[in-house]
Image (cartoon, rainbow, N blue to C red; front, side, top):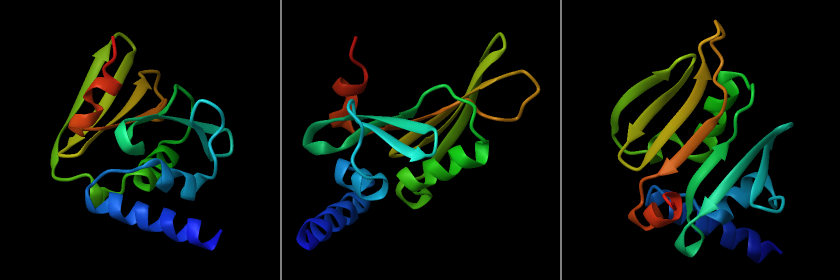
Length: 142
């Protein structure tokens, strides 16, 4: 058991050095996922993960929900700390009627938070997409 924990921690540290998160890292933080690779990241908040080759995380998504923006920011920081994201490449806010998305792009990851223009400052979900070339076919399936 102790050896498994050490291996998980070392795998997690190795993935941090390359700016990529893997399944072992998420399991160490949040425990075993529910079927469908769903992690409970906060009480009542579920995060679905899509993996690429070698168990690397390609996409982590908290579907539309009403969660405090501070909680979503904290979860994003847990999953991919600012130091692992690479250089900030800018921010884009898109709108279509009352719906919008706030996307922040970095060298290694893009973080998108949808919102509703209803007077509430709260975001309505979170999508973390890793910009690893091995993830392209996994994330953008037709």
